[in-house]
Length: 613
Image (cartoon, rainbow, N blue to C red; front, side):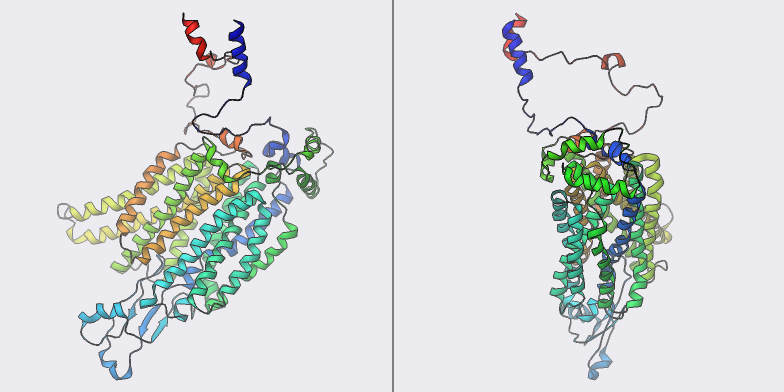
């Protein structure tokens, strides 16, 4: 008996090794300083006047972010190109289409080349581009853009796609790098550094002397733009109490869409691409004042145990909100004073790999974001293809295409608000992903069936019209739902990821979104070859995402996790609430589940044979 008791004590006191290769997050006794949403922020006035002012300061730059994100559609828009033939051979001029819109939101444009023979020679001249001089006509409100300035047509058309790559690839790297830096050095330094370098690179873009210089500077512009987007997103969500997080984020999304809607007017007023680029970047000079007026995230300081800086910021917030800190019934300031001697403790996103649940949640949301943005291009391309093929009157010019896309995005954000309020984050994401999958599968399958069995259904003469109308309808529905999926996946990840690695986690999901958007210029570079397979792959991804979404936890009205241990506590709950208030969710009865098993210990392996004998 004595040996058995000693073995039990030894098993209880020694450190337990990690199972299956996972590292269990460090757990500490929860204190008031770690309960930010339930204790610290309510003590400082909750979502008070000062927090609202800071939220407004995160909305204002969103307008200029919208300008920068959609500037490619104006700076790199494909014009109507007309070859200026030699005077001696004007009688042999024939007009032949050369270019299609490089972006899915542009109408089809026509280019005309000088041909010196029959129509059969057109293909040869299209490949070799014998024309030496071009005249251009833009429909975006600009008189000149990058394409017309350096004649990026014919053999030089590939440079346009490289320029489009530059901004997106720079953003992807920026999200990954600045996400890690935001967790290590803070949200505020990342914001300020990004703004300063954005001013430098963004204004230098306007003075580019050739295409390589333009593309290189656009890469660094996208890199810095990613830092601004990421840091503002994190600062905004960490300022809010649970009930305000989603609404404040959606307002910022509407402001970004406002920038998209205002871009055509900006282009029309500026007329030249260099002036437009400067006008987009210059307002960011106002953000330099954020060095003094915008504080570091209090939530991040407390989560990383930087209590000295936390004490000053808490006093500043209490003063702005006119809160009497002497009425500290929970003794928060007392606990803060005792914790001042603790050393800061920062965490890198790499630690996520050692968790059991957290990494799965982040990976699922990254795949959702990638799929949402990737399939959005498929729907948009399908809608523009029907415009080009059937010359639909619905989409007849640049502005109609542009505002159709923007209108779908606005409608998607409007629908997202009541859907998330009623069904929560997981339920809303699941619903929009199901709609996306249905729209994609019906577009790929039903339209082929209509064409195959049109004779049996006596719709042979109307088959093309039905195909066109159904395809446009499914494309609009798919773009509507995929836009909601992308936005909600990013917001969902910001709520699930703990504060200590929120920058890295949000950077991963935003970078995944960037990869999804990158599929558009990649397909254009290959002249839309493999487009159908591209759509099929993303349609299959939507089905996988539907299953994976069911594994996610629900975060509505839940406090933000602060540490890795808090993030691990977010586990999946049933999608639907109990049908009756007293209905049990657990397999065990209530009596069984309440039993105390703390005094039960495992029997040592070497004692098992003795006990059985």
